[in-house]
Image 1: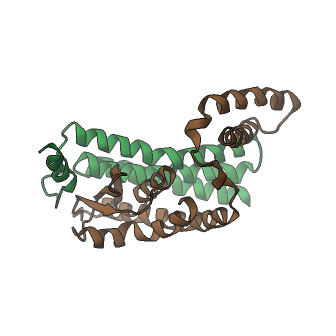
Image 2: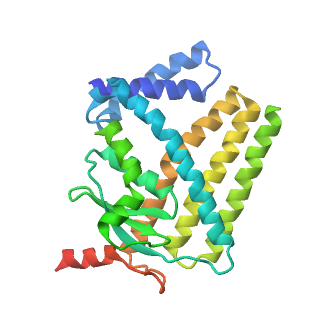
Length: 164
Length: 112
């Protein structure tokens, strides 16, 4: 029940933002729409809704966003330089990375962050073993521990505090 | 003033989009092409949308642009992930000069 309520609030906020500026008719129409969506898909949305009440997690999330944007910008400049270089300096390969995150949301965010950061992107996850398969455009190390340090460590530290 | 800043964001975004497309043509195989397109095109399009937000402010258009930006950041990597996994599952080989393919090795171990 609680995760349906959380999804109802989020859905209602998005409804209002889509129909900005809000007027009475629009808001009234939004209540049943958000309620239907929350009733149908609430159970899929969050398994542990009590975590939404924890303020410290939001603060860590605020720290995570600029970190992520900075890495994203570096990624773009990196790829742009590789593409524009006439010799095309790439050395691609698929490596394995370990992770200690357990929750689905945490793993999703980790995979998305890895995809949007320099030269790496996530191909598959094995949650039961805690292994991610990463395609790396410039393989610097085939060893699983070194690769984990280079690719995932800086996000994992923060994401662990947000989602686990 | 906010218009000038917005246009700067839009121009940067267009530049990144073009670089992503050049990468799509120049890089050798599916996986490397996905690298270029996900990163540059996500960033470029987000930059264009942010530019629209800066020009329009908290109006109807500006807020929709911000919503699109958030959804794009959340979904673009997932799409790339699905494409790459599908390509690997259907047997698309890595580029001949690739260094290693641990995914293929582990799949082989699973079958035995």
